[in-house]
Length: 300
Image 1 (spheres, rainbow, N blue to C red):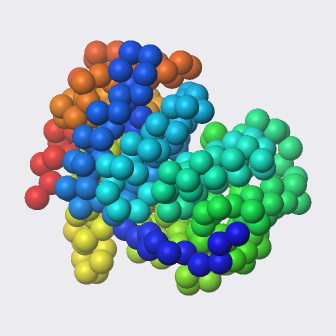
Image 2: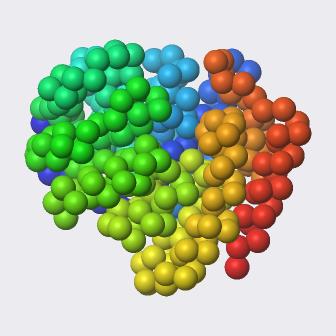
Image 3: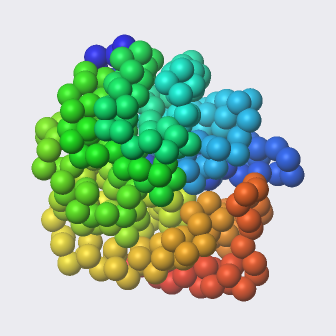
């Protein structure tokens, strides 16, 4: 177990897509994307998460995605997605991430079991934190796990020496505020719902882990910088005018398919291919997303 975090996470972390070339992970495309985002002043990377289609990767591909990301990040902080349905499975992924050189692990509740027993959920997270080879960040995404991590459990598990923060992708801002009032100042909160990243940072979030930072990193960096200097009006405009319209298309069409379509429209991916059960978007929807990307890039 680790008792101190050697890497500082802050600002905008990108939950990377996983590019595919035929039946394989496109390592070259992933490397190029990480390098583009690094040049755009991103603060760090989160591979093998929801937007990265972790559940569609083999164990070997999971390792390839993490190895490629860590190598391309070249010292930038990397928080690896480590979702699994068992304590041992989660710990195994964290061990893999640690061996490769990731700096922290993003941990979800088991996403198949339907039981929403607070004691069981707390026991799961505590058991992972006890033996994790990396600092642990909790990941609240009830749309995918079938249940939220209750704020009281975040408060309790957050006292563990090896739990450092939480990414909230619930889309429920009341939940985010509830958690923020319960945790200590050094517990790092990240807003995972793109349209909530600006109000989240004003309400105490360390930053955001947002799918669209793959595509329009300059917009998220501008939001980060506006909040940092207390420019409320500019930050509000960025969130409402340049982030929210494109984010709504992600909500409608799915984060990986919409984000990859947006990347394809920007010329940053050759193909927007996703793996079943996800489906690549049709041409009309891609055109609509491309228009939203063009609009977002008019930021001044």
